[in-house]
Image (cartoon, rainbow, N blue to C red; front, side):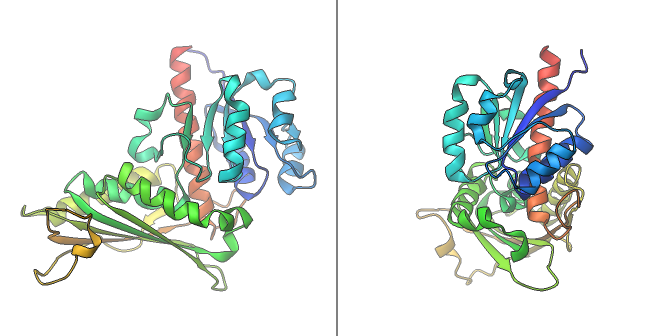
Length: 318
């Protein structure tokens, strides 16, 4: 097996794309920076890339396709916007590149590395859901592998300072994409997502709450759920070091007279027996973004993990 690294391009020279570039340069084992792509010649991301010896273009995807060495790029990260990714994906379609989408466009399957990356390693375009999805869907999946999750609700609270124009423009897509992924990847029967832009100063790091309604009559189910969640937190923390539980997993019985039916799917025949509450914190690694921007760090870390695994799989077939 060769030790040739897979060359990657990053579309989007903003905060997310620049942080991802630095992660590739500093920490990647199987990846090599090929090109940083932007549309603003004065962006800090393009300037920083040039100083670090990374080839750049300020002519968008058209400039990338026209560059010498484009044929050597195997993986393309898109850190732009949902609308832009639709156009970028169409433009790159004839060239057989693997796309990793960090926008809420969701052209390809939703991927959360700790949950379902293995079954999507061959997909031509994978979607990294959202920052809230990357932080909370692993927890929903951890609960769902123990007991049926009839309803899952996540609340992602991030510093308003870490929400740039792209994040704000995609708020509606954020909630829709995350809600669908809670069901499709997390395994809940119904999902709901809420995002809060917290204006507090000094800025607070990302906090996430996962609330699940589950059905089980088994003794000891609370301990099984807690153990499963704790294992999943360790799995995510392996590629997002700042990811951690804020307090112990809470599992409480639901009183028979508590009205929870309005949260369930219409026609749901099971009644929830327990409420599960999980409180998380995500601190950024500080590669390019401040530590409070854990919401952006978890996206770039998850995308990097996906690319590393895709590249490693390519190596085994060379």
